[in-house]
Amino acid sequence: MIKKLLSKKRYYSNKEIVEDEKEDYFRSSFHKDYDRIIFSNSFRRLSKKTQVHPLSKNDHVHNRLTHSLEVASVGRSLGIRAGEFLNKKYPDDKINPYNVAYIVQTACLAHDIGNPPFGHAGEEVIKEWFKKNKEKEKDFLKKLSPEQLEDFIHLDGNAQSFRIVSQIENNLFAGGMNLTFATLGTLVKYPHSSNNCKNIDKSKFNYFLSEADFFQLLFNELGLCRDDGSFKRHPLSYLMEASDDICYGLLDLQDAFELKIINLQSMKKIFIFICGQKEVDETYRNKKYTDIQKVSRLVAKSIDKLARHVMEVFENNFDAIMSDDQPKDLIDNFTNHELKDGIMEAKKLGSKKIFNEKRKIELELGAYNIIETLLNNLIFATYELYTNDNEKELSFKSKRVLELMGDDRPTKTKSLYNMYQRVIDYIVGMTDNHAKHLAHQLIGMGY
Image (cartoon, rainbow, N blue to C red; front, top):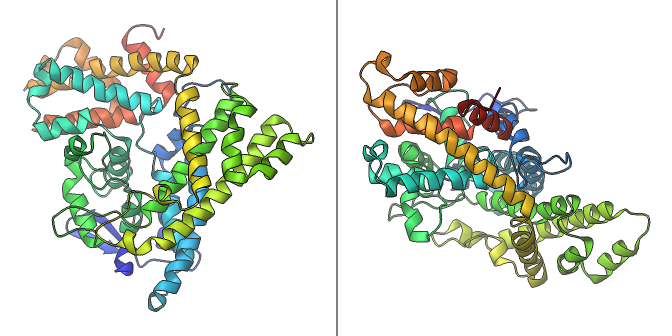
């Protein structure tokens, strides 16, 4: 079973699924996965995408790229420990811990690659735009099936990340980045489609209808299909998820401190839970450190302590993680209640102080108008393309909007759903700055 989960197979087409055997001693199959993410255009664009604070003027504040690199750093450490654990548990399989580390690290690098401009605010705008127009029974949505419409109404960066690496980037609709099955499986946190969102009352899912067949193939190959047809999570995805939770829980606070949204005192309780009273008191009193250095020091110590406990929980719950009745996540199963309280307090403080900060709200409202402008123009032009047999008969505006998209413009197909998906691919791929620039061009303010 464990060998299946660490599969080196790569997908190129339904007729070409090949195990990667072209390895050098210095560059394994999973190392290649890492390189493919690092050198991709989609990953590089994360440097100009919002993590929490849109269009921040402070260069120290995290963007999606720096966040992803930090998550990957934690994930690599957890992956090595997991590899050593698996090697002891399955000695006959001769597992290389560094291969496991690369799998987790690469999944961490790619976990936010499908996030739209302006972070979760951008995601919410797209979902709300489709929902609002569905309720108004707009003609341009009537050709979509209920299942297809669900993909847009519940648009999730997790599903878009999976689509980018498995379909879009590098080899369009021919396996995308052609990552190993092990890495693709580890990337998946929510192994279900958008049609399950109504059951869990959350817009969290990991594959669109367009990727359903490939997802089924992938999870069959990995041995992650239950008898009832549902899918299980890859055990290493728990480490990817925990790495992300640890980083954003603490580093969002570090950003908020840099931006003077919260002060040193407001974080003290969190640090005491995780690092202990003595460590925190000594750090807070130490005059050698600036306040920023005090926060950085305690955040680093907190990440280390939380990561160590994550591995304890992973090892202690491994049999359940491998079973059909998998746990929700690792942090939910923390046995050290002070560490669990610490990370929960960090998330609470973030929700209370950071996500409702006035400047952030102002910028998110601006982001709302930017993405709404893009959708109003790009989707309507695409619908006109779909309904016209002769492209020469398109309105002047629609022609120019489609030309503005360049090589990314949707091609006329029998499926309106697929054409709209290409518009969303285009918008999601934008940086914050490019989305702002293009929206200004479309409304005549870019001169």
